[in-house]
Length: 137
Picture 1 (cartoon, rainbow, N blue to C red):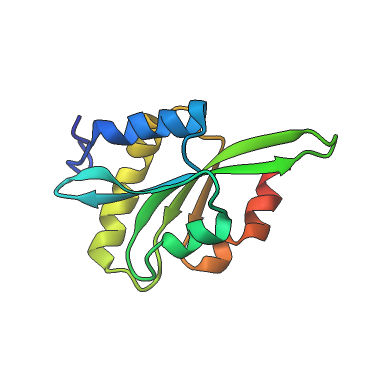
Picture 2 (cartoon, rainbow, N blue to C red):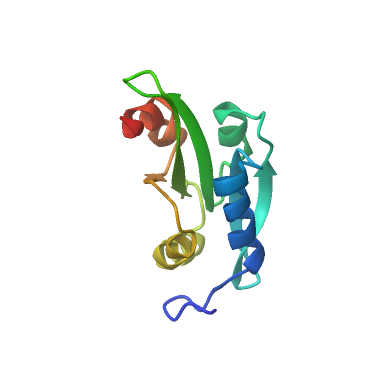
């Protein structure tokens, strides 16, 4: 499962938990990190958690990948949800970390079948709830 560009593998648990989020709605969000040359699950957000809980779970000075199941009411008044993939790469993160996360992102994202919207953020304002809402319509 190693990525030829970055040499990273994706732990099977990442895909299993993503399927649970997508089909069973077992989680509100999942935060992934790169550890020991593989992408692993760092945190699972419970269904009752909200976007503020999710945003607060991202480290201020370390890169992460995340998926968030965003519920909203459509313009025709229907309850819907979209699954966001967020690549979090804060300005304060180490250069090497930013490079590893950037070079591995596309391959990792392809492992998660069902992502509907992708965001890249380097500071909290780039992934604020208003930005997320603006991407669902």
